Length: 161
Image (cartoon, rainbow, N blue to C red; front, side):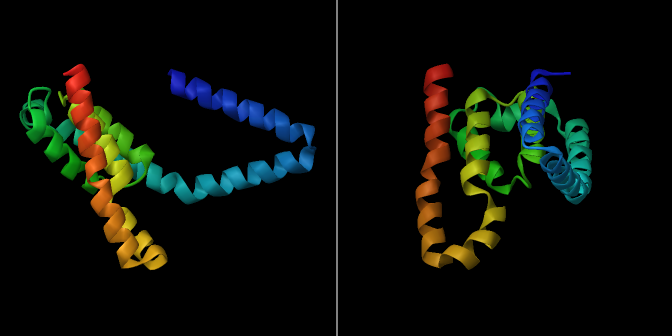
């Protein structure tokens, strides 16, 4: 069991204790909502782990080091921003994928750029953003947002090489 699992168990335990103080009905409602969320997302999470497993096997370390390795400089940061835009899914998919790339030899600055690009520029969000926020907002946010991952990557490159 890793530290993230321990922390999540602690948070779940504390929340269970607080809900128990409010009575058994609160515990039942919380348990029901937890089970419904699990049913809705179990297949998605299973598929994410299958993808991560195959990416781990199929991603050649030399290719990763060549394109987004620690010595790729600005080119690696630019490529990492583009890759980050195309990463699919939520954190349960993206962080294991990025972790595999990091273990395969991706540099620190490109990894910072990948995470930041996915968080700010994911193409998957456009389908949700456009209907609610409109074209003008989406284009402006994207235009300004392109600078953020590059800046994060460059700062990481300057500070930590």
